[in-house]
Image (tube, rainbow, N blue to C red; front, top):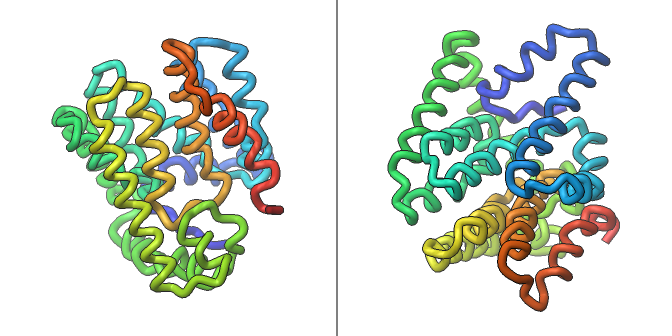
Length: 270
């Protein structure tokens, strides 16, 4: 199968690869579940709510594919929670998204619009440390190989090699319904601009609302968003629920949250 991750991700994958397959698989799955439980618990502070989140159809989708969506969403959630708690040093967790940079595409505008200079510095420092460690361990050849491999995701998206119905991006939606490449890229670019505009418009809103908007902006912005990576949207729903429980639910929010929870059950079939 294709390997399209930066060498930073080898810091996780290489130790697992040294183990027999089944123990490595079990450890990998446990790592993702433990990290997402940590992130959900820190946001919700409610065990029942955490269990409801884990009962979403996203969980078997992530675990069934052996994917890293729980790991990356926990990193994103930890960084957003640090911003909400005004602890910019801990927002260095954003820098660890160097392992999956398409999920960090709107982090820079978020930090710039909110003038979180310390968080920017911490994120850049963490990224530099991780990239430096990967260079020390595997050399520049690993990064050259990664650069050479970047044509694979583009082929997956443009030709539908994985299946457009398995992707949740605006680009794949347009391709699935017969849109040309220019039209599909234009729609995706409009989504990215809309996400950035949302961040700018709501930059002064309450912290958890801004965190939810950041998650939505990320999902709108990347063309490479397979459906198990919709955990980023689920994370936004968690922030939205936590805010609504603290203040009040708007008329449509409960229905929207229920839809986000159940959508992975029928997304591919639809």
